[in-house]
Length: 226
Ligand SMILES: [Zn+2]
Ligand SMILES: [Zn+2]
Image 1 (spheres, rainbow, N blue to C red):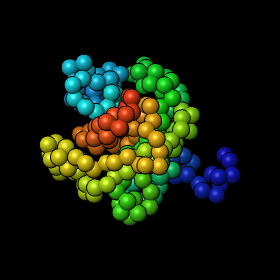
Image 2 (cartoon, rainbow, N blue to C red):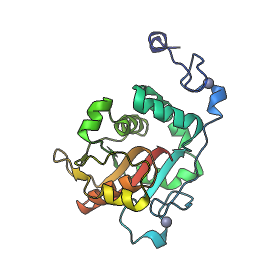
Image 3 (cartoon, protein in one colour):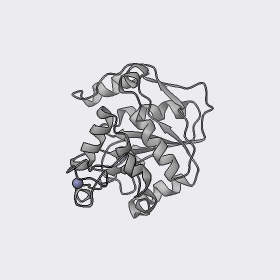
Image 4 (cartoon, rainbow, N blue to C red):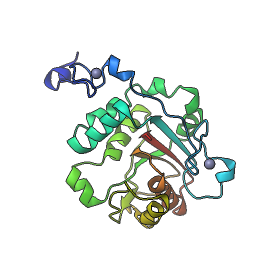
């Protein structure tokens, strides 16, 4: 135990026991999610988009760690609304070993291109309300664990509100022109775009479209859960 644990003792999100954010018995409740094509959302072993989906603009591939249920859902929801964003890091701690899994083969290959980690931005009012952007917290954790640089290359210029309860078409329409480039940074050659949860992909595909239109070469997505 290091001194940080004494000053800020960790408590399991699942059962409340002290010691770890996710104790060994609750960790059993974390399920790996099947990788999908970011365009049509059908299964795709390495998270790569299908060749028949190639005509649509958006992400080249998507890496998703967990199923958005059970303990993973609990951690993400708690982090979002209760400031416990250390929990998010907990989902990534064992990543070097974790990423050795065969379904992350193409993701690992993409990391070799040294992409810049870019978080999906929040609208400034929402970020102010919440006090932080959860995608940025995950980006920081991830960029440290895989040793990549992180830049806030995008800004959200439209308050898109909550996507929950909206149909696919409506979500896509709502996302149009929601993002712009952050003039503070040059366009990275390759981008690893990061968010907490994947639902329809409308948000991430729109971000990707903006980056590619501006000259980014390849954009791969990364989410904690879907
Ligand atoms: Zn527990
Ligand atoms: Zn597809």
